[in-house]
Length: 375
Image (cartoon, rainbow, N blue to C red; front, top):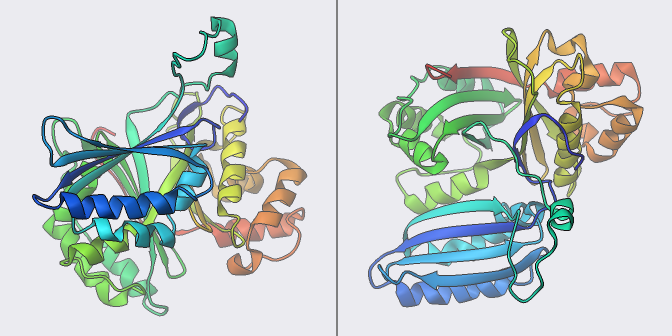
């Protein structure tokens, strides 16, 4: 991806290899069952495109604590695998062995290989992936569908919940929660300072949040029972909508920012390509003079792509910029990747009429957008 001056805090498209770290705490006596489940998983993942290697480690201090590390050619193939139904079924045998897990994903920026001579500094720097500058926040989203005809009732329930306490612990705080709907699809995006998993668990334990989740259960298309750990785990695994790119313009924060979410259903199998296109366009436009989009986060899972933007002025003042495009060529690329029938916009995106229609149809209905004090 072309280097830019904007402050990128997250990107799955920088071309770097990916290191995935999974920390596990096992139930007492479950070691052999876990080892059998790991062998099954290892054999399955070995054939996944983009997978390079993995290691299983056991703590020398606490035998119940284990570590699985894996290396991937880049983030996109890993994300495609970890968000697939195949992955859900592959890891299912581990659930009864594992008391607690924590997953971390890192781009490999530098490394030392004793078997090879040290590369001179200028050449090494030329081949190195640039480090990203973050803002201390992790971003994640969930998406699920509700039964057709229940949209207004679900929107009413979701809009009425009380915000949980923002401070999770000494190092973790909820920064912002934004919730949108597009037809019968719900998208909830969160920004967290500190430990994302700790924040999500904190939110899930709050009585006011539990009450809302129970209230919408009858309207969900995918059944779940949040009192059953296995049912809850599978639901939230399938609902995960990871952030694959985030960029913020390197200019002072405007005072009149408005938050919008845009929904881009991709043609079958093209979700990652569509997300990459939007990410590259937002990265290139981050510091363009007059660009109304101050910040953008692209979320993607399978063929679902959602772009969350903070924008100055009206959304339709500059439809092309609001959609994250620049020029006829990029509109043509989007046209090839977008499922126009699903969004209700078929035909060429080179026409002003269809661009305006796409922006109108992609714009999601805001339900709630709540920032914690001090954000």
